[in-house]
Length: 96
Length: 492
Image 1 (cartoon, rainbow over the protein chains, first blue to last red):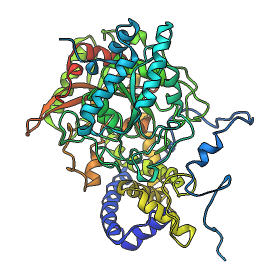
Image 2: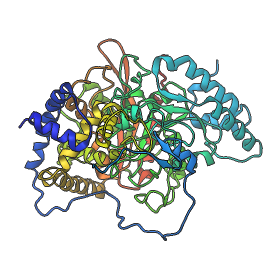
Image 3: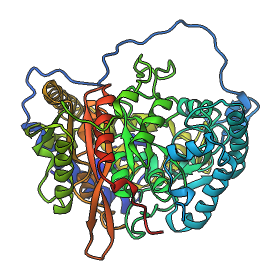
Image 4: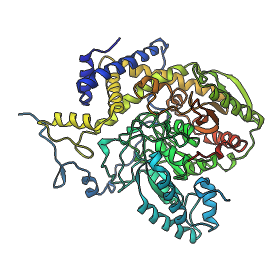
């Protein structure tokens, strides 16, 4: 079942990837085709089968909560698109 | 006339260094000469680090002169550009990280530095490791050293091509669904994906965290073992790192397969596969039989055909979460002309990410969204359990499984670029291995003559049960030593 144009735009908005008209049309075809391909999984009987999140027999890896040296502050902030003193600058996130 | 330095294996080069017949500085200068000679045509590198390498080579020579160091000391190597290198930009093949300079080294880089790394540069790749051809790099594709109009395979395109072309003696890549093994087979080199959890991912830019694993490219199986031993081991910085030391492989590297049980799962010989690939892989299995292995041609892993769908749900789902961090605030490309935080974030990602990355983020977002989670993501995780169980059962009675790496040899650049599903189908033999967390290796096993006359390498894939890399290395090494496919070099 092909995705509608509105569905593609909704997913793009959730994912914050911003699509133009041309991309929306192309991605609609691609994503619909791929989702169709996924349908085959519905024929697999998974009654009573537990899900696998990852393949290691590890659970709840913990360590002592002790202070340790971190990365160099200047090296970290050197990558900041906009810096103000020792802070990352962003637009206001709360609207008036 | 002696072989040129750039065609030596890592071990041969290391022997020359140890015997002081050659210095690391000379070896390094030779590698840069080779890069200058060939990389204009191949484009394996995004960043070349000659000054750093020269300094590292000098230090390596001092260590060797003191009688210190190991097999990797002073050996020129290349690192995939999604493995963080402190002070050296790490782009992930993406515009969004074009100018990102990591403030720390990945654990694998630190381990290799301690072993005497000489880093010649950072290699080209599909953006964020999403791709099977190398064509999704924001900085232009890598060309296959065996046929420049063909894809080297992806996503570790530059690492495979650099080792095949003699620009580095080994390279690191990452393998989430075949991104080491596939380009290794297309470029005629050895490529290892270790067991999930065997090698630390600290400092590996995350794509799909339940699948990602770092592995080496080399020109021989023994070389792959040397690099693997240098990077394997527990790291408290990666909580999905297994609490195990690197295994000792000395006893595994013997040319004798008596008593080894080899299984050949029939589902991997898919419809539409290139006859030359089938022939080469079957011949490789027969060769293993001639070396004393017991061959079982009747293994069946019936869930194999579902693996591709499982992967293309799980990997994009994890990616959609992992790539949420690229919002233009802390690092990377940042659009700031908009009127609001949301507009800037959306534009940053719209302009910073390429098509395939957007496509996968959207797929993952959809698969995880309300109302679809059970039907896609949870269902895929359940089928994942079935795939793993079938492998577990097969390894009860077999030491290794042998399959093709890819149904076809290298395709032409541009051939599949507008058909993402067709491109995904090429991953059919490598993906189940990541889903089940197994170790796998690609070893050269022949050539295919293309219609245009190109001579294209073919790889055979050898799989073992989790943490049994020793079994995989035993078979790979014995097979390799009985053949000479790995000694072929591209006509550059």
